[in-house]
Image (tube, helix red, strand yellow):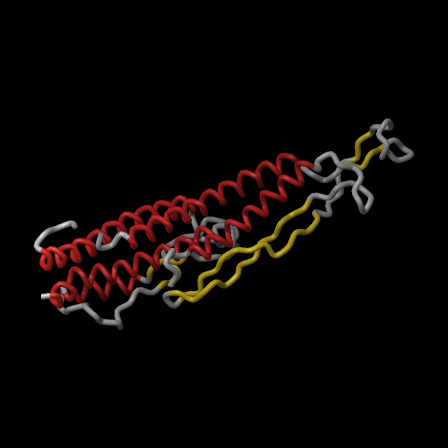
Length: 129
Length: 137
């Protein structure tokens, strides 16, 4: 009974996405800290993570416990630099990305939380407490 | 990975920006100082930053910012005709500091906005960490 809950695709997926969201927060922290560093290129999650995740989910493969699939950071090649110093950070963009990431993170912790609450309910027969 | 994601990066940037604010305050305070310990008028101080590697995460190196040095702006200040001034030369001209208040105000605003942006990142990182601790509650 316990195993299926912790192995459920939603739970495992949420864990992976939480890792990704925490990593993105670090990237944004670095981008804002370096908003005035000449030649700095903004960092973001590498698009390969999302692509691999999507294709594996579509193929019906289980991503649970697969350590080869982990989020990585890369320079954001789509960000254009409009400044003479070659820095591609736009502070408004970073703050919006940070807030978006925060909502996503809150949502994911909620999903993980609910999974654990279900398990508690199964054990005790009463929710919440 | 730190429990509060990226807080070490933000901390470096915060202290660097605060140092810049301190130097702006010093420049404005000394905008009229015509005599210093070394003799001559006050010279405007300029902060320069450098990047510092914090760690490797997700295959990329994450960098913070720190103050690499504080140096004097060598451009000569204005000369003002004021023969009553105790520091006036024999021709009645006083060498004033090279502080330009407009530059300082721009620097002040830039530094304080950068500080605020980094502060909001720190707050956000803390909120994420609190959410993490609430998992399962």
